[in-house]
Length: 569
Image 1 (cartoon, rainbow, N blue to C red):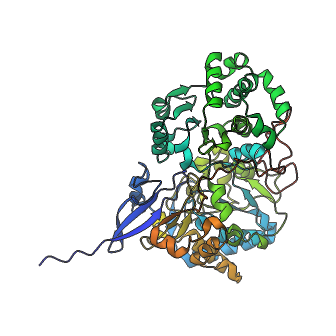
Image 2 (tube, rainbow, N blue to C red; image 1 turned 45 degrees about the vertical axis):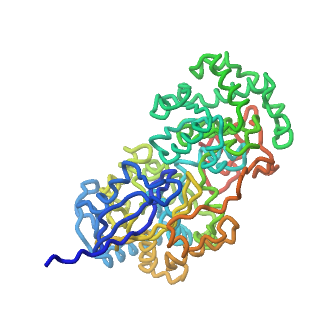
Image 3 (cartoon, helix red, strand yellow; image 1 turned 135 degrees about the horizontal axis):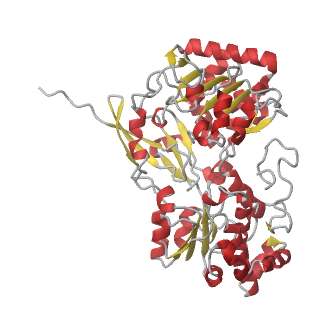
């Protein structure tokens, strides 16, 4: 007789990569093993497709080189030679070493170092923030990406986001600025095509002839980092030719006269050599943008990866204010939606900032190599724990980071799925779960669908989610605070219980059943159609002559270092 085939279970989840699409996926499981992973066909934004990288995600889950047990270094740092140890042995040694370092050098000698290796609500940041915040360890400015754009846009608009990206279908003049959408934001591309089908003109501003540029109606191949100059020349044409929506500007902006005077210095003829476009092309672009409504700017990451990237975003943000594009559905600017998600979730309930020790030093994650090698930094960093991050390949000054990690007096712990370039220098490597092995809530930065990532299989080997790792570390440190041991489900339920109208009816149970649910965005939502910019004045703010920004967080003596002003960026 043929043995009966066990039925297949289907578990919904969401990709945890740092990508605007945050794809919904389906894991098919038989006998406790994941046999297939595919896009969730019921997800309205990602529509059943995954990118080329994530299509092979199960290969990572079941890769023979995956770390499945705690490992202790037995060779020289950097050799990558480890021996298996028990969780109890690893935790006891880590806690003992940390306690000794604190006794000798203080809590700030410990540096927790993490980023968006797993981009979920609680696995990226929750119990770790509570533990290290309450200990008083060194803080970390984790703004290696995104903060530049958010700072620049916020300086003009008061916020780093814009319209719902799905409203692009209502646009009639769409500018993809510094983004290769087909490759890096592929689920947004069908919406772009729909807008084109409704009559929109697609313009791509990019120094490179990308696949997206090739598919556009018009490609403006500017010189790298000349974006602000092009935007200023566009404003010159709009002011000169009377194409500014003066009613909108008068009601909802500050400093138009000063800006109009400033852009006189940026005529298309003057700017053309700097930008790399003929003056008549700049003229045409400016006129088309200003006179075709709704017009939408879609900048993503490309612009911010340059010196003065924040100022380039700030300058760009002036364009939809001058054109009045915010009045129209599908008009204005569309960038990250993270602020919309995190603005409605009860984040303080998850992070619990009230338990953090005040006035601890905050180090910038981009300066890891400098800080590890510094002898002036007091206290010196003597312990590093890295999770959700591989700084040896993702941070500047790789050689300096390596030099720091080679320090014999630096005690390093890494939690990861593999022995990464960073983990090779660790004293302990702890096994982390993959995305299909843990529970999380997945906000998106490219759309408004909130997803619940359900664990599809049990953690392989002895791997644990980040949340469980920090419960174990808290116990090893003999902490007894109940809020250091809160369950994953409890934290997620608390995050959803903010009472915000955009979350009305979006419960843990509903997400468990449906996988993903769209935030309750009001119909025909135009965030700044009637002004109401979240600035101090409630109005869009002009670019100040002779200044990049006002006073930044660092200049005001706040905890966040090098975050806003061009001097600090």
